Image (cartoon, rainbow, N blue to C red; front, side, top):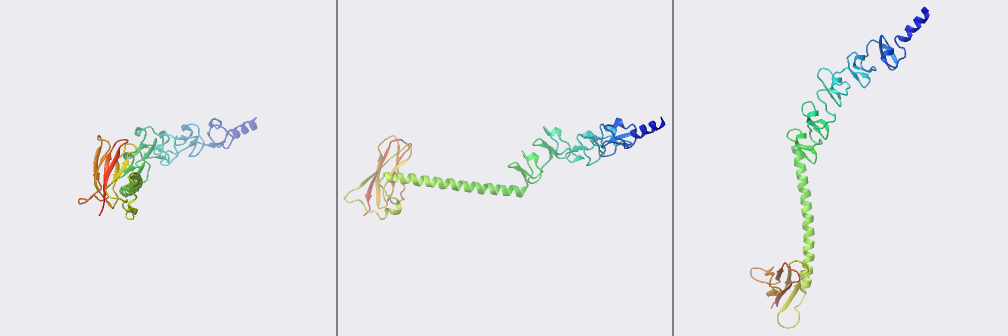
Length: 271
């Protein structure tokens, strides 16, 4: 009988197999073995009372000191907060739905996560997410130098974009002018000096007809002088252009802003 009692005591003592603390009346269950006393840091636990420092974090005893593992603020002692890096002075890294969920100096709810005000290149949604003297540009916190570089880069991008638009507009305008000059029977300027006035005496009438709601003009050649002009409709603006203060050589007669209108330019051959 005494041998059976001794065996029973040994089975319930230190290093006996266990699955819960109740299997170890004089100690605690750690890694399926009974250990003496209350659990130390790292020992398996079920509730805070299973641990010497009264912090059971995810089934393991923890100290609750700075840097110790934690899941909620109550896992930390001495007024420390629980953050992604363990117990400390803030709860950086935890999820949030507003700044009221976040604790610690300079800790805000940024993109639904508690985070410190960002320094250079940190993510941001507004300038409030960044440190002082920083701006939030393209969802990135930038210091003064970063802002300068970003502004310069944007200016260069805008300059190139404007240059591309200007070149596209220039090509369109050149094509439109060539079309209207062709309607007026005038060759491009680069070959005009090789042309001769059509045979015969008198003045020449150049004409051009609008296609759509556009300005249309009839143009004299570079070896001709504009002496008059007009439009075949009285309800449109009619005026000369492209001449110097002293002469009308190679000038145009314009008809502005109407469908199906024809411009006329009366051109005289230069002597």
